[in-house]
Length: 304
Image: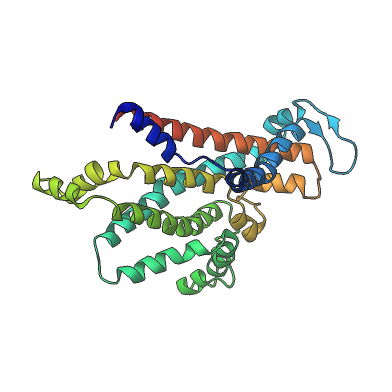
């Protein structure tokens, strides 16, 4: 067959989209994009615009310039503790919960006895919302009727796990990590199942131990999973709200940026513009972490 004949045959084999096909594609692609704009990016852009205004949600919208940001950084005492708590949240989930989830995934992937039971049990907290996890934390760590103080027999002077601002942030972080660990475990377990067994066999033949095989052979092949875990960890740590609000409405040592947004926008203050400024800061911090991480991963992919 000549080149021209092959080219004509290729053209005939290419199916052209009919009007109906284009309509279906427009609906299937257009509706999700429209919902994303209306539900996600619409409110986000509205928050950016409102952050430069002074509005209580009822009266006229007045232009305030950068005054909301000046007050936020200089005259709003809860702001910097909330920033520190969000960063602590990120560090704890990223450096403690995520590696522990990886460890559990590796152990289960090795085929230990009752691995199905462990997998189901460890994943069970993931199906719970953080609000429910907060209520469970209250049942366990409550000062007067909590299960932990009852087990410890500390009745004379029980420890106020949730009321002491030096302790409650760590208690809540443990509860949040309990849920996050199961999520990370499932992600890494799915990635480990897809690793080519011949890579492990080749590493064993070369004399590599289990730890060397994990860190030098298996983990590099799990780079896509690492990206997903990193992004999810950042998002989970910066959007945390439910659990601290269920414990003590995000006060007395549990201040978070998401709680400050809620208190100012729908709280008694009714400061829509000021609350929007906090939301914009939270958005920029989130995008900064996520974009930086993805750029680094993309550069790593290009260099390989």
